[in-house]
Length: 162
Image (spheres, rainbow, N blue to C red):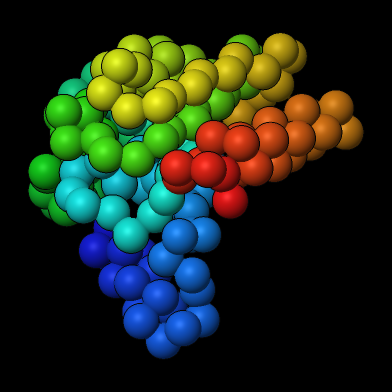
């Protein structure tokens, strides 16, 4: 999947549909993992925004499924994709955020990833007060996260913002 999203973005640029200087990636939860995993290889994106990302697969272990066979088989599909194991390869600005009430992807994932890339690339971490992982999100959660992303894209994504 990681290669598919990057290939899709590169294709959009090659077809003139997207501007290579104005393309970013955003994901939340599993999508946050996918956005954070852009550090593993050269990226077609100007920046990545990872909301509630799982970034440390080693700390996650195999606890994500009750099905033993699924844990064993699917565990191999993410080998080499661990964002924390690839932070030295980071080349684009990164924003990570998570709610302080998120029990599905605790803040150590986003905070640890931020700490690992800080100083290598422009990076930002935000802990959103009173926000859980999933619904119910309240209007203030949408307001905070959408404004955070809009501000980041305008000012900090790529060399001069998007």
